[in-house]
Image (cartoon, rainbow, N blue to C red; front, side, top):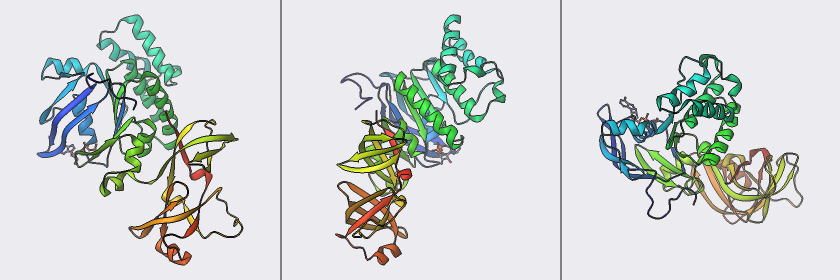
Length: 370
Ligand code: ADP
């Protein structure tokens, strides 16, 4: 797996017996957590689960109540060594927190404080503002920037520091959807190129799927599951984790054709149509919400439908989810659909029955694998 250290090499970051207390309440209890060199660890969890507190402890902005934190095998002690280590880290917050000066000064200031030489400051500032597509704004006052532009500057500022570990606290949550998508793609490219060791917290499972080498699920201050994103999202350890992470089918496939924004994805020998500009041969994770899969009885001839995807399958399992039913089909691979009890009864469905699962190409969300 990418991000795993060579045998015997220290973790980039490791904590043991970490607890944090806020307002007299224990809000975090982490017996052990390792972050491997060059990996992107994304911590997801509902609001109030302790994500920000964990990020603040790891980045040495908050002193834990108990526990030890080591960077590259060296424990961080109280006092000056904490301060020195903190200067080797960078944190990007939910709010961009830019200083009331020009864009360029926002990037150069941190470098100057860290004693980087003049020539290098200019070079790195230019490189990273360009990399995040905001070099044309370098003389603008930071307070005149849009939310998306400010976020790009705060990311450029963090990368320019060349941190030992990069921390991000819900960095994209305040952005509107198109702005967020564009920035997420640029950020993903930069992470793949630099391979900087990264810890990011978010409540957005899609961000985790796009960015993470490993995902940790934090609930009530405890890590309930940690593993590769596909593993966590498709096999949650228990119902509570499933309730948070599960929103749809997570499948694996390969693109085998591309034509004008419509692709055909091979999943275990069956073909799905999806809207995407990815090229043929790309290995993809396929996300498809349960609600977007409708079921009907097979007809002798294909019934007219706006759904491009119509797969025959057999019902293998069914169980109630709130007022609805989750129906699992064997279509050559396992596909699940969420339907009302009324539909189930009207269609006369039962386990073992053959049905047709339909869904639109636009409902199929593809993520290119690394
Ligand atoms: P998340 O980032 O997952 O939303 P936080 O780390 O912000 O969660 O908070 C974890 C828990 O600690 C929550 O229950 C929150 O209400 C509580 N908490 C956060 N800050 C304080 C504080 N300053 N005093 C008391 N409780 C706090």
